[in-house]
Length: 269
Image (cartoon, rainbow, N blue to C red; front, side, top):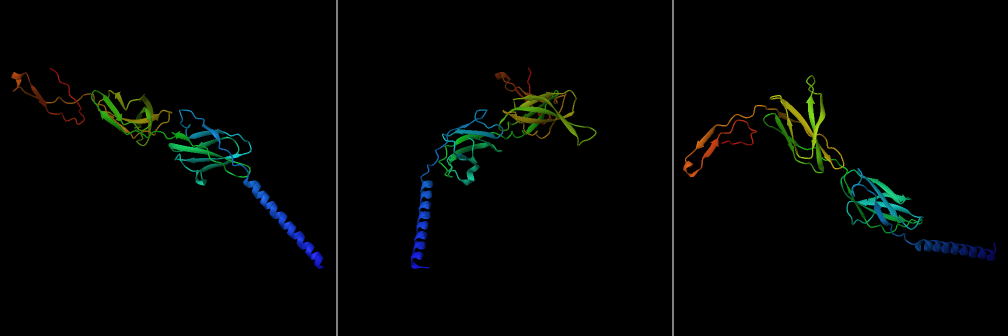
């Protein structure tokens, strides 16, 4: 091969290398000058119940001026978070809406970022705060007070989120102590409930269920037992101190009957 031919081949290779290099630079420059996507605007949450999610389901929707983009959805428990992979819950969504599901009560914050056709991620939207109320109230702790004249009083402290209560009559079947059934015998918005029976010294058992504003029910409380007492307490032994009678004062004192659950007295003259 002559020197002339070798020089021509070398020159062609150099020109080819230069052309490929220029193409690489042009492609890189074209990528770098692509505009970063705008921020999704008017991020909105479609909810019922004044900002609470519907049983943990959250509906997000937003507006965006372009149609050739996709979106990332980010979620965190703090409002000032910087979106990252650990906050990412949905990637490259084509629609401008998203449905999320959470399973614990609390405050959740969402941000949306647009992604252009070149894969660049724009600045995220401002956060939107969602208050999630998905857990039912806890079962109340109930006390049964065995009153007199057939009264049994149930009392409990209100669990968090409870607004009303169902009172259940709990019955153990006589032929099988391991078998029982319950039925609703009443309801109340108070934290006490009074029942009246006529079978002297018979035991009655109950449970209470707490209900929140959305109608979700707690598990039944532990079973409590009250005794129907139709007789009432024994009469106290009374003593009178009249040493101050000249001053218009009479001091009464008495012994407390053996009934440990006696809570008050009535005085007659």
